[in-house]
Length: 102
Image 1 (cartoon, rainbow, N blue to C red):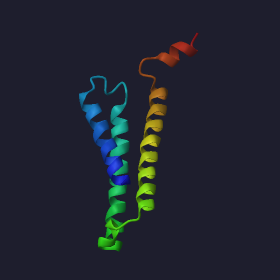
Image 2 (image 1 turned 90 degrees about the vertical axis):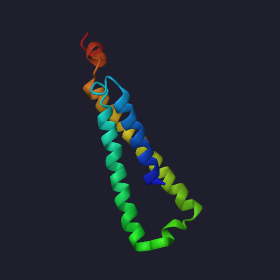
Image 3 (image 1 turned 120 degrees about the horizontal axis):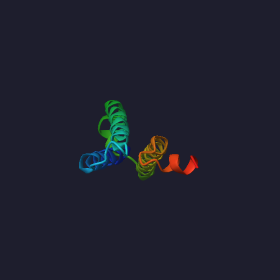
Image 4 (image 1 turned 60 degrees about the vertical axis):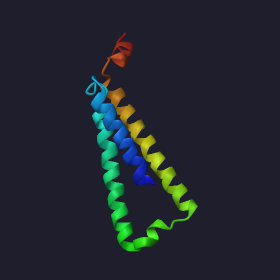
């Protein structure tokens, strides 16, 4: 579930990056790359876990699926928080610069 959630977030952020005219101002590429990196990490986790468990990997308990889902959502939220911090630091519209330079 973690892999699926991060791939969905990566695809959505990539589509947002592609269709947004001010993609460089809002650093949407950074968000997209974070989610694709997380997806790659979870994919490698899946490969190694599947190599160890084989078909048993797909017979998980509900609690395990719920834990994986919550972890995936936590990764997506953490990615958004990091992206917002980067956006605030870069301040593309100069809002904070104007506010604190008075």
